[in-house]
Length: 119
Image (cartoon, rainbow, N blue to C red; front, side, top):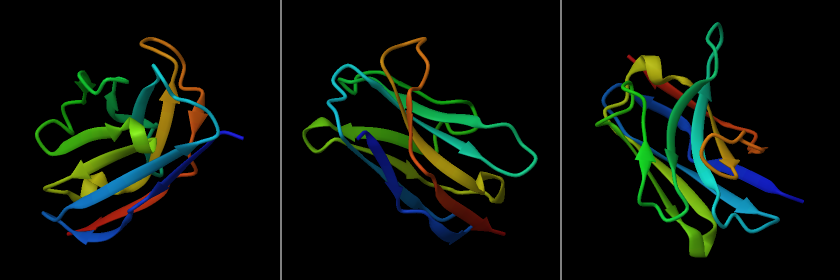
């Protein structure tokens, strides 16, 4: 059974940092793109970051550039999202996801971890 399990969410003050982790199990994710998304009430799900299998290519929306960093350790089947300079508008449930390649649908999703940034 494929599982993506997020951890590391919590409550932090504006300007603070959090490090989210995603542990993948149940299959090999060789070649998979790993991504982070977030969802908050009244808003559509938003792309936050993605990283290729090799880790050589990352993508971020403008809202995350310069503040968030995605990385992966394939030996541990782990993906992390380092979030710095957090803002109240970063408050959301953050999800880890996996896609078999660029332009492909994210097939696997975690349950999410809550991030709350207080002002």
